[in-house]
Length: 262
Length: 348
Image 1 (tube, rainbow over the protein chains, first blue to last red):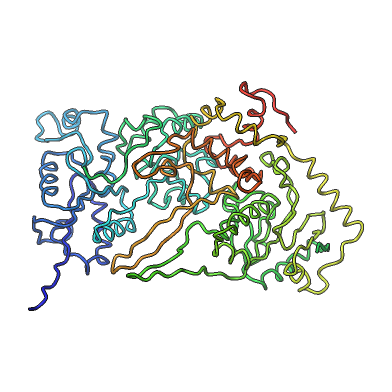
Image 2 (image 1 turned 90 degrees about the horizontal axis):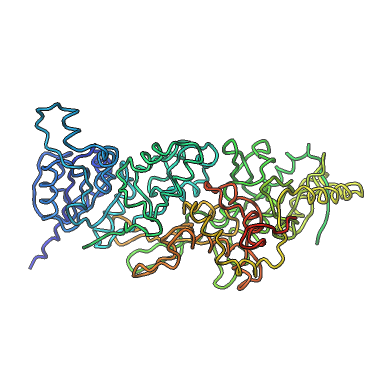
């Protein structure tokens, strides 16, 4: 009897409310993965898309509209592994953080007028609504981390994703510290690494786009930035701009950032 | 086998040539307004002779920030040998020589770290004298005199360098340029001694280290730890910059195709919350207070038990690198010595 050829693992790439930055990174690097997977759905990059069960679904963007939620539930129901890619999907990003002080109704009214047809939800990360197997943060994600997540999941291993702070990557590169030397409001100490300390390497302050590192010391960060002369409002707004939830302020209780499989 | 020579500073380019002949010369260069780093240099003009402390200590040249230690393919595992080339490390100050001495002891004890030792063996170390700034306190921890760990040590005696030789390789280096070295004259020897006496007087901060291990244990519950821990960012900056911190993490990096991959080791830090977390989620040092106190103890006392020496070498790197200003080792020691009220302690 002829041996049946093993079918390639199937993946899909979807976007909710986001800037498509993750999709661009995935598209740019897809060639490396193409011999190993079949892409059954990637509306951003191909015209023939099927909604069928997949081994791995990559989802970018936050849940900010009712149709995002419907789509997410359908993706979850048909995916073996659901990977949240990018800060929007993992933390809610600016639409979750900066906009937190307004209600969706108020924003819709102010932007689109009284009689608008906008149906908006308070912007939220994917895990508010569905089980998320792997969270890969970034704004946008790092190509190397994306490929290593893919490599691990294709072998049915949970990937290792670092949650150590940006400061580690910065120091290993032997950069001068912009927080110490230039008194810039660098959020490297509380932000998850993975970007290779990109901004500080070019002399700019980290603005926290990767989301919090493991056990971020928010109070200490606040103290240090305040002492450098930054107003408390500005400090808080920097700290929460990328969707970091308020609960993170609780000290000494390491935030569970591990891959969760409820 | 201590031998002493002098050579004029104007002749330094000749000395640089001799170093280059041996291999890549690594020396401090300026990388920002306030910072320096050991980098490969191709001429004497690139060297920042004024550098007191580099961002990362010279340990990075023997124990790199990230290196592949083995590769695997299917069921075959192969050790990756380090790419070792002859090199000359120039401009190492006494604190960093002491730091290398601590790492030598750690990495050569069983099981020895072959990568570290191979790189160390292929390197000629040229020390250089320095004058302390307001963060230096090597004289408080006994690392202020260059005692070992170098091949040649240069002391700046004004118009010349006074060169002490401590190994056959060092002697060969000095003798490779005929006529460059003069045997140290009586005057030069006097200038050398004067330099070190003056240097000893130039320290601006310090403490008496007697009884320190006992005091660190005694003050385990001192409120100072809570006070400093409240400010601790757990950013881990204090550990990569420390000449004697050597903890690493091991990561397996799978390739996208096939069953191959690499095992990588990368510097880690005891200041990260995941460092002391074990299976099941239990964490031996869950908060920044626990982690900071642990690090202080390790630097000031922890190594006495196993190796018989403390590991702080007084370079001041942690003090200048800490964004929260809590790695003021001298200030903390003085407060611990003064007891609970933080008063007293005997300044040098």
